Amino acid sequence: MAIVKPVLRAFDHAKVIEFYVDWLGFQVDWEDRPDNTPFYMQVSMGDIVLHISEHHGDASPGGTVYVDDFRDVAVYHQKLIDKQYKYNRPGLGEAFYDPSILTFTVNDPFYNKIIFAGKKQ
Image 1 (cartoon, one colour):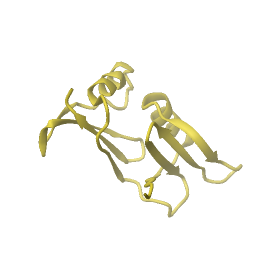
Image 2 (spheres, helix red, strand yellow; image 1 turned 135 degrees about the vertical axis):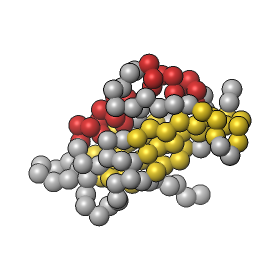
Image 3 (cartoon, rainbow, N blue to C red; image 1 turned 90 degrees about the vertical axis):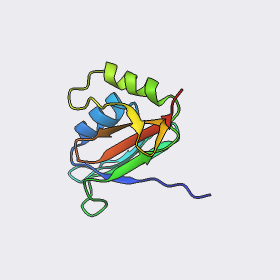
Image 4 (spheres, rainbow, N blue to C red; image 1 turned 30 degrees about the vertical axis):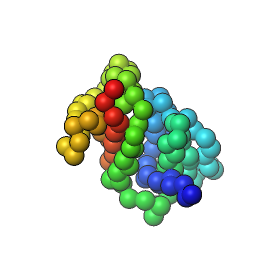
């Protein structure tokens, strides 16, 4: 079985930490951040693993990651709303393709999107 790890482009290490770690709840698994060079890191939350790169050519800003079958999506959504992150207040709604699925989308500071989708409880 293959493991997919999307690479998302970023431009500011502090904003990556604020968004992915402090707000979304990911952890930094490892990072390569030599002095005066672009950073590259892996963040994860449960089974979700993302690579985030400041390196030119690794990825283009504006990517989308779809997280399917996210357990307790409504609970996680409320947890994020309760943090009152000033740059993102995503709405929660039924998926257009299946009313038994709830989705919400977050937009990172670098124009990347993550769509969280999970069954209604």
